[in-house]
Image (cartoon, rainbow, N blue to C red; front, side, top):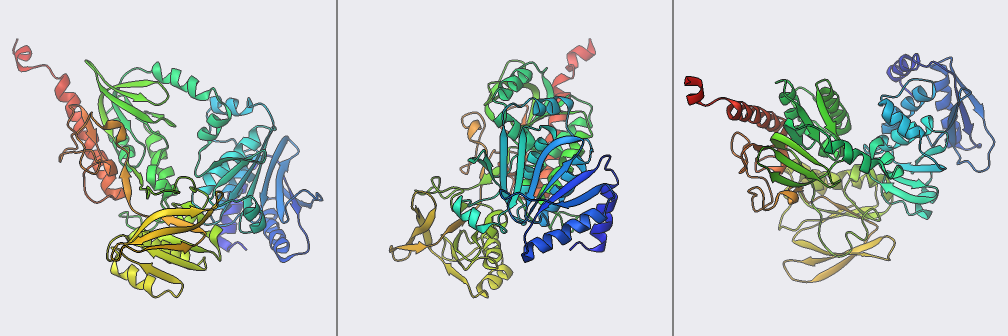
Length: 525
């Protein structure tokens, strides 16, 4: 199942194992079980510290396997065959069960080990989901470090009946002790914060005690990362505060236009960005949401939702943008219950079903093309009289037999039974007629909305809510600079955001130098 190159890499990784790893397989006589046993045989052949035995437990999913070691009490399982994006999750789990220390601070490790109570986690994933590995890997690590925490990572494609019965309509979907816990991408810090209810208050107290920064960057996407690096290289006190490091890049499947990198995936780029930033003396503060900007007498202040406030001599705002929502009845009610925003992640859950894609730009047409290879039928709805996607994409879309395109179509309502989506309603903008479409999934791809609501009344914003900046990334408030998708800079691209983040940091540094320099009279005296 693994090619020669992957086998060689796997063997090299597993040389790091310091203790034995026992794999227990739960199988039957079916083809999928045989396939999994072949896969586990390849893992065993990659290291003499790995053993595979047959287990017998009627409560286990078939096929599945658990990872354990005689040296620790660990409850970690994979249901299905973790290939695709989840192969890295399996390799990490093997390493961690096998004694390789996790890349966490001692404080975080101790916090995990101190979590009380019984926590049985189940995560449904799809092999094409780029968001799922973060969640799977975080929960696996919790299970490795704390014997009170169990985790089963479940390939939804292997267990479609369970996906249907538990109404899993987006991935990753996490259940805790049988109840829905969370959906979507989560890092280990976010999961710990949900389990350790006092963590946010303790973190807020730590933030309040921080000294003022020379430069504080708000946002951890490409623009924020570039600004942090350029600031830190100047040797000044630099901080980054963000909800999650990586921003929209984390939700991007394929990146093919970043100069010098022919092809990569968003999560890989986000990890590389964070690692690059951490090579410098930068104070990175995650899981924090900016709520208010205040211009003080001596410092600029960023007030956070947690109640803490950070002070700085200069600011770079790089809060990015998020997927725009339709804003119609039923959208919020059926979010993650048939209304989705990531076709790569959630598409496999709609195999053989009928779906709609809202939006006829590049992202919408690309989503429709990808989904057409999985689902029974795709209906694309475009508000304008014609699709706006590149011609080559439109030709590809229109060549597919299971795709229908509706133009001048305004979605007016998401229809459902209270538990999941059953259809949508749209108005023909040419005739005014209203139509219903029966379907099971709706993928929204209608552009971006700048994350700037917290700045209204403080900075000059455009009609679209973007921060107005000049060619030096200056905003309407002295000492405050902005970069990336949240600004009026045209063309929302990763490489442009990085360039603008660099410009903003250099402009902010120039501002600091000029504002701290003695005036001419003092020099003359």
